[in-house]
Image 1 (cartoon, one colour):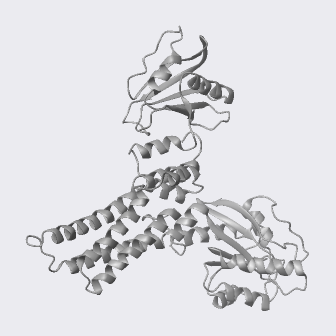
Image 2 (tube, rainbow, N blue to C red):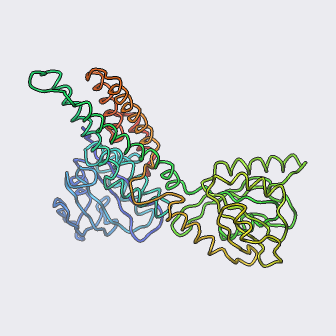
Image 3 (cartoon, rainbow, N blue to C red):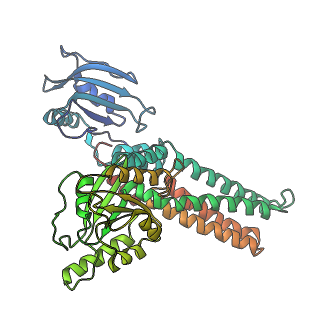
Length: 457
C-alpha cells in the first residue's frame, strides 16, 4: 500500500512557456487545495475529476502565480491515484517555488520514475508497458518512437499474455487429468500439446530474432566509414554531420583512430564512425588505427566503403572488399569530378554491392546516399517493420529462458515421458514470460528499472 503523496516537476527545469507540477497520492487534492485560491484569496473547489480550474498559488498569504489546475481522481489517472497537475508560468524559479509550496503543505519530492512506478504497482500498466514509457522519452528517431508507442499500447504484453494463457490452459488440463483420470482423459493430448508448444516456440523465435533490429532501433544503426587514406572518408563524415568534425588534409594517415558522431537521417538514427585509412604501414600508431578500423567494421550494422575513383584499386581495397562481403554495405565512388580510373559497373561486379558516384568535395551524390540508406531500411535489407520488435534486453533474456523450457517440453513429448514431467517445464516457461510483465519480479529489479527514468515521470 502506498500511503504518501509525491510531487515533482513534470516538465524540464528550463525556461519555457508553461511549467507543470504534478502531485499524486491519496492526499493530492487536499494538499493542493491548501494553496490554490481565487484571485481574492477564497477557496477554489478542485475536487471534481477531469476538470480544469483557474486560480492562484498562494504562499504565506500572498499570491505567487496565476495557474490552471487539473484534477484526476483515482483510479482514472496515470498513476491510478488522485492526481493534481498545476500549469504555471514556465520560469525555473517560479516552478521551484510552487514545488516548494507543495512540499511545505505535505507532499514529498518524487524519486526518478516514481509516478510510472506507482502506475505499475497500482496495476494501471504492466512492467513492459512501464519500460516503454521510458523508451518513448529517450527515443531518438521515428522508428524507435513508433516501436515504443506500440509497446505502451500493449503489443508486447498482449503477445506474452497470449502465450501464457495457452500454457496455463494446457498445464491445467494435465493437472486436472492427473487428479481425475476417470473423468478426464489424456489420450491424444500429447499431439495437441506438441502443436501448441511448437507454435509458441516459433513465435518466440521470431521475437528473439527481432531483438537485433530492436537494438538498432533504440541505439541507432552503427555505420562505419571504411576506405584507404585520402579516399574522402572524413570529408563525408563532415558533410553528413553538417560541421567540420573531422580533420581533412591531403596528408595520408591524418585520421589515426575512430571518431564517432550521431545523426538523424530522415527519421533514422545513425551512429557514424570515421576510421583510419586502410593501408600497409610501418607507423605503429597508424597500424593500431587500421586494426581498430577493421574491428569497427566487423561490429557494424552498415558499412559505407569510400573508394577514390581517380586511382586504381590496390591490395588495401581488396582487403576491404573481402571484409564487407557478408555486411550491409554501400560503396561510394568518390572524387567523381576528377578523371575516373575506376568504372562504376566494374566495381559493382567486384563488390556485389550498390555503388553510388559522389563528390564529397562538391557535395554531389550525397542525396543519393541518403536515399539508399533509407531504402535499405524500408526494403528490410536492414530489417524493420510494423510488427512487434523486442527492444529491451531484459525481455530478450526472459524469452530465451522461456524458449529453453518449452524445448524441454518438446524433448519430454518426443521421449514419451509421462505427462507430469511436462508441467514442470510448462510452468517454468510461464514464470519466465511473467517476468516480462512484472509478475514476481524482485523489488530490487523494479527499483533499478525505474531509477533510470527522468524526474517527474
